[in-house]
Image (cartoon, rainbow, N blue to C red):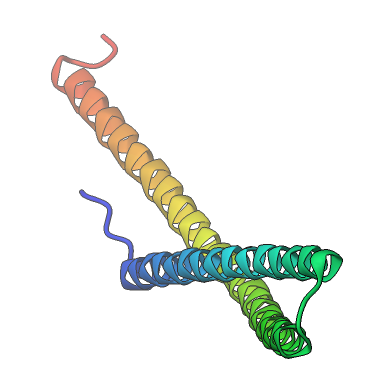
Length: 149
């Protein structure tokens, strides 16, 4: 007799859920990585802008040009703050998704263990039935051969 687990649909659903959450976590990590890369580029731009302004101030710069550098530096600084906030939000979302993945993984493992236990019980029951059938066969043969003469 083949083994048929009565909760197999639940096991299958849990596995699909786990794969979906794993994909969400993977996508969240990719998003976070992209934002972190963008943040790093903005920081480099800010340093480059600061160094350019310092160089121009050493050789002399018009007030209007200095105001333009200051305005652009303020713009890039604000862009960095926005990117940092976005990064923080993505990090929080990633933590929540990783916690959800942990929960879903634990549930999936629990159902897998229950299935394994049910299979072990089924196998043991099958062995007992086979042994009983062999014992009956041996007894019948022994009786047909004349038993203990």
